[in-house]
Length: 490
Image 1: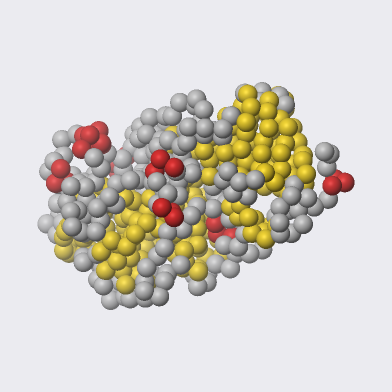
Image 2: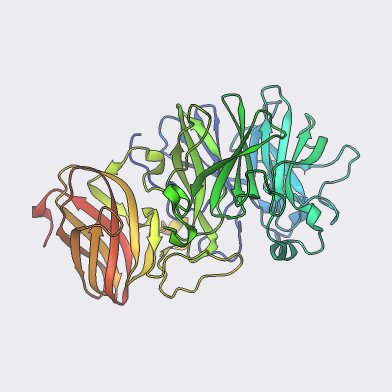
């Protein structure tokens, strides 16, 4: 890395959920949905693309808008949003983008000669008799594509949505339960016509007894990768906040449950229970990628007290010799892989843990969480021209923000930049509930104010947890670690 990279790894004003990463040439490209700041619906914006050189995952470049929602013939009036896409380089060398419009249930395809150029509408997925899959309410509901071309050049399209019954009715009233699930289709070389299928792939709620998928059944977010001759199907489970994987010797069936790769609240990591989540929960979606011999899982987090403004994150993962993947914890350093330098200024927005005095809630689908005691990520500016200025808001009594990890070497002083009507103390520790390594006195201030205190931590790798006790609340913009007393006040 030429410089450090954090989670979320894109600029603070950018909201890319559902990110699927791919290496094309010497660059990594991410394709995802496109939320907006404090949005009113999922995936409100047009598709954009970001890329980075394979030898520097800190250097993300905005490729611009690659496909507008009005380009779809079914959406000339822009009344529908475009949900999670996936991209593959076809057998003809062109790039094919698969997506669905919200509540429509039909899989559409756009095509481009380059990975991040201007995609053009190409067609919709159909049976060989010309019938459009998903057009009839009695047909399978198309959702969250996963497109994959195997080494033998056979083309597979994964699709599916399997929520609870009441959510199905809200999503597309009138479709039978049989329309929802996890499905696979084999496509003809034209990338549109179904050669075989659709066929069921992995278990969904109510159909998992004795399969190994119990408690982690398929919900959405199909994604396929081939690793060391094995097929890894990544998906979002019925729990929504986690990405799980299943493994098979073939791409079209025989999958067995592998485990959880990541949960945005670290649920299940080292036995953690849902009620002890270390971050606010909601849906997540992403895929795996290998870059320079290192595998990563991409996912997204929630902001703004709801599920409509989600941001891309990533963690390094490790494929064990037996092919298994152990769950990784969410971190602030993410794509950096190594701990962050224990010196310098860090934005509070890179917190990987955020908890209130009442713990964390699950941001409900189609509803907003009341602020109450809950801290949350938000921003001052409204778009990229404003540069974001993201921070943690409503940090009140009993709140905790965690940052993982840093490599410390002789750090002596810690400063925080805050504003608000709070009065009390911020204590900093290297473990949850651990001994204090710094204590800062907090007093009301309408403007951004920097407060400093001595900092005592042993050299080496540590997390930092900031906790507040007192009255009122404050906004938390940043903190700084330094080794020079003379540059700061007491």
